[in-house]
Image (cartoon, rainbow, N blue to C red; front, side, top):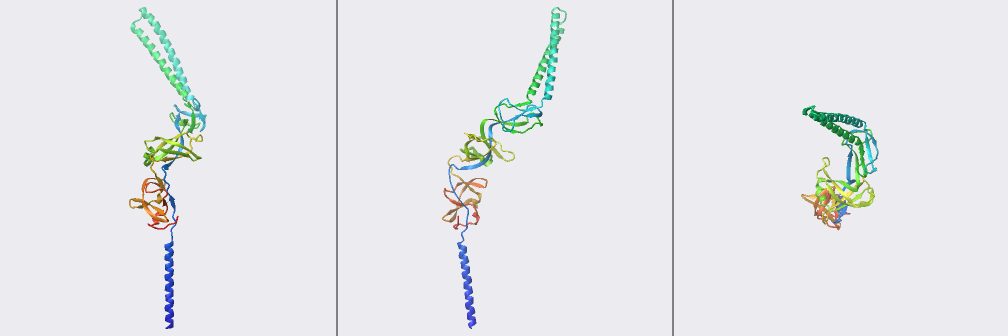
Length: 355
């Protein structure tokens, strides 16, 4: 009897201990507060809608090419060389063209000799005709021979002038002052007429060339604030203006080329530098970009978790453009709101969190 009582007491103590351990575990689980990554929303009308990488280019760029084919024998400038109008940039071997000029020169001399003979014969037969020694038909033959000889002289002279022009085309001459921004041919290479061998940037005007996706073209057209920064020049920026938008998309990238004119660019900006173009929205609409991971989608309504007093609550938002793992929020957020940017699928309404 005494053993059974002791056994009952022991069993009660074990059950009580197990229940206390379970309660402590439950209370510990309830006290666990997840740690979340957050972002403070800052709304500013001047915030850029998007940023694009680009390259500093010249406003006027000319692709230089020879007007005749041949083998390059000399290159007189280097990449980045400053040139003036009239400078000889490259030369083609002129030997074959010079021989052509010699041939046409000989043809000119031959035709002029034939013209002199025809002129002498015509004068002689005109005198004979005046003396009624020959008929009119015979005089007409010599007048015709003179006209043929004169036409031959004109033809030979034109061929000679054409050959002389081609001989001049063997030297590639700069048509204006500028900077050599590209060289695509070297001495020893055989080039064809019209093949681009150099790029000449004229003047001092500089632009930024960027590529814009098709869903941002309208935004680019309506942009009223463009700011340009330079990777190689920290702290240096310049205002810009959209000058040109290509009407046709690139066949490979399916993006549109856009040219941004620089307004009063710094003197330290050089051709080929990497630039970052920040484009502001038209009007005074306040927008902000948040990470895509911050959006909690339920049905057709995008939402975000708002943290207030350590508690999360869902708030619907209106989204705009997507890009670079970010999404534009047009409505639903206020300045100073704190949102969850990671692990949004693991939260529940009213849950306590730690920042």
